[in-house]
Image 1 (cartoon, rainbow, N blue to C red):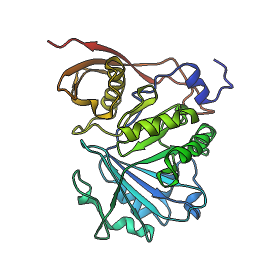
Image 2: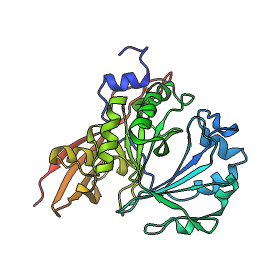
Image 3: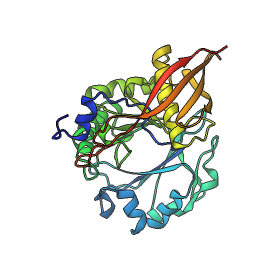
Length: 312
């Protein structure tokens, strides 16, 4: 492989499997940092701000929420302080929005209200539920591939989804799969997204469908609290089974159970909308060495071998 390839070029050249490359996150906090000091994202913008910045106390509080992932968001010429909370670990995922008067308001978020079936409360007021949101990683200081591929995808998202529904975001994870983006409220993560893919992603999301061939995984599976390896295996199995069954509606499949066979080996059962059970055997292994970030040495990465299991 050409060592001059960027990490995303190498990933695309080897036709790297996308599904099964997302860490679990049952709750997303999106914090606008447009304008000002926090808008100058470094390589690890959230981590750096949580260590020492005016926003650090609020970030540290949110980081302690189980299953939470924090993303900074921004858009050109905005000066607002939008704040979103997306609860993905439920049968009907939800995303909520409010405007912060000050970042200190993050300390007033009622953590007990972050539950399925109710709206989060901040400063004693319920946050407003919204229908959709799209975030694309465009943080070139984390990896140049994020800016190279993320910027044109962001521009196309503006056209297809509208400015109010689109943000640039800090590192989602897996920049070698740039452009990488999240469709909320479900927390569906896509990779190797190019501008021609955007219309299909938005149109399908709005109609309740997903694109398995660009699918990296989801934030969480309703009713399940999985460790990282098991979650990735479930995402890989889900994409595989959707292609086998041509089950492209988001609600077509639901994770039923995941049984560990020992080591990196699982039997994963899903149930379709008509109640039929399906099972997939998933075994994790390591790929040949590949660059995971531009300029870093190549190293093996987890991948999944999958097959259908006949149920008695």
